[in-house]
Every structure is written in C-alpha cells, then in structure tokens.
Image (cartoon, rainbow, N blue to C red; front, side, top):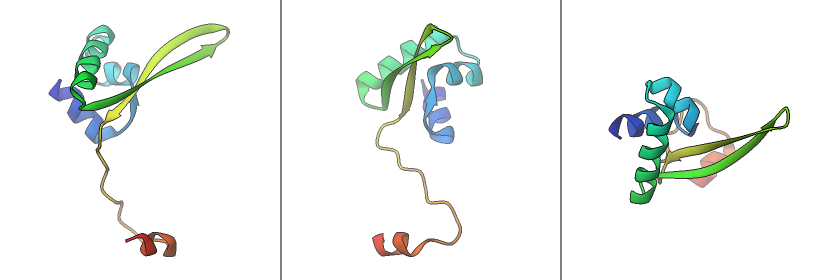
Length: 84
C-alpha cells in the first residue's frame, strides 16, 4: 500500500488502470488496496463510467486525501499574490 501512496503523491490524481500499469501490480490488487486506503481515509476515490464505441468501461479515479502539492516556481499573478 505504501507503493500506491508514494505513486499518488508523486503523480497526483490518477485512474486505477494507470496506477496498475505504472506500478506493475495487478488491477484487482490495486482496486483492493485502494478500497482499503479509502476506508482508512488516506485516499479519496470516485467512480467513473466511460462509454467507448458503445461499450461501458468502469474506472476509479483516486488521489491522496487532504494532500496539497507545493506551489510551482515562477512568477505569480496579481490575483495569486492577493490571496497570500
């Protein structure tokens, strides 16, 4: 499960199929681990249904719960400066 958490921290929001492909873990195992992590409140998941050529494809979108990535370097707009 640590491998999934580290992957999500590094890459942000991803589909369960992308996680399985990138980590080399079977999709069924990834889904089981994600459901356990979601039950503990460590990740947030959302069910997504796509229709491609009339075929229904169910996927799970997930991300780390409460994780806010650091601000990217570079110039900030005036609107962003007013918020801080």
